Image (cartoon, rainbow, N blue to C red):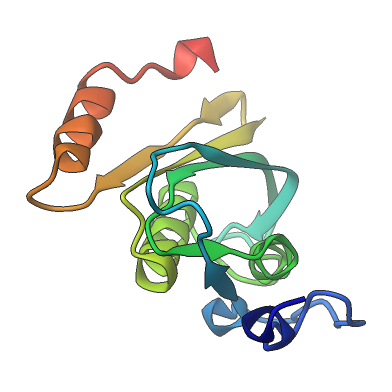
Amino acid sequence: MNKENKELQSLGHSTPVPEKYMPEILETFENQHQDRDYWVQFNCDEFTTLCPITGQPDFAKIKILYIPDKRMVESKSLKLYLFSFRNQGNFHEDCINLIINDLIKSLQPRYIEVIGLFVPRGGISIYPYVNYGKPETGYEKLAQERMSHHSCLSL
C-alpha cells in the first residue's frame, strides 16, 4: 500500500453508517492511468432518501459513470456517502444534482454522469439524469452530445 492510500480513512476500517448527509465523507486517491481515457461505473441498487414533503422513503438505483482525470473516488467512501441520504429529505432531481456536484468538487473528473432510477410512487417513475464535461475540452462536447441523445427508455 502506498503512502497516499494509507491516508484513506474508510477503506479497511469499521465505519458507522452516517445519520445525516455527509459530502465530506468522500475520499479520493490518485488515478494511476492519467495518460488515457477510461470509464468507471458505480451502481448503487439500494439508494434511499426521504420525500421532503411527506417524509416517506424513496428508493432508487443510482448509476454513476465517469472518466477520471487526476483523482478517483474510493468505493467504500462513496457507499457511505450514498447511505448518508437515507435520512435526508430531497426531491429525486435534487439527489442526483447533489451527487454530481459533490463528485465534481472531489474528483474534478474529465466527464461524469449520474442517473437516478427511482421506484414508482403514486404510479409514476422518475428517472433524472445529469452530466458534466470539463469546460473548454472535448469532454464538454461529450456532455452536450450525451445529453442531447439521452433516453431513459434504454435504462
